[in-house]
View 1 (cartoon, rainbow, N blue to C red):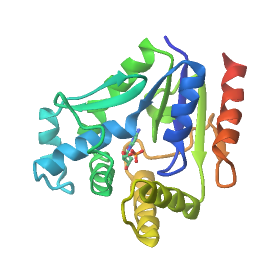
View 2: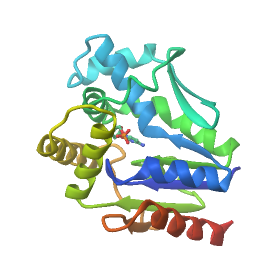
View 3: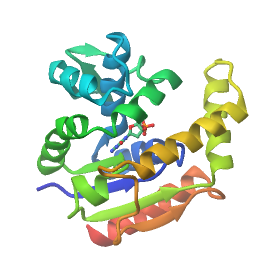
Length: 221
Ligand code: DC
C-alpha cells in the first residue's frame, strides 16, 4: 500500500495546481481524477450522446476505456488509446463531465482504476470523493476550498493567460452550477470527509498552501 494523500474540493479551489507541485516535492504520483471524468464526458460529446440521458450514457460507457500514463512526470489521459489531455480542458467538456459524473455506471467505471493506482503507488489524488469514497483510509485528507468569487477569478485568469476569450460572470455562474451538481448528486457527492483538514485558499498564495499541506503530510509520513 502506498502513502495516500486525498485532496478534495470544489472546482477552482486550486486542487490541481497545489497537488501537482506537492507531488513533485514529495516524489509522489499525482492522480487527477477529474481528468478521467472529463475523458468520459468528451467521449459522450464526440458521440452525440445526451448527457441528461442516464440510460444512454450508462450504455455508452461500456465502450469507453480511460487510462492514465505519465510523460516526464505529467499525467496523460488516454481515451480509447488516444491522448486527449488537451481536448478535455474546455468548458463544454467540463459541463458534460459534471452531468455524466453523477451516474453510477460512470463512477463505477473509474473506482477500481483509482483505487488500484493508490494501492500500488505513493499518490496524491485529487477529486471530489477521494477522502469519502475512493480512499476512506487515506493517510492524509485535505478539503481545499475558496470563495466562488476567488475561484471564478482564478479560472478567468487561466483562460486569459492561454489567450482564450471569456466572461467572468459566465464563469462564476458555471462554477455555481457545477458546485450544485457536484454537491447534490446522489452518489458520492462532493463533501468534506469527517476526518479531512479544511484549507481555505481564498486569501492564500500557492506557496503558502503548498507549505501548509506539505507540513501536514510530513507529520504523518
Ligand atoms: O476537477 P475537474 O473540474 O476536472 O472535474 C470535472 C468534473 O468531474 C466535475 O464536474 C466533477 C467531476 N468529478 C467527480 O465527480 N469526482 C471526482 N473524483 C473528480 C471529478
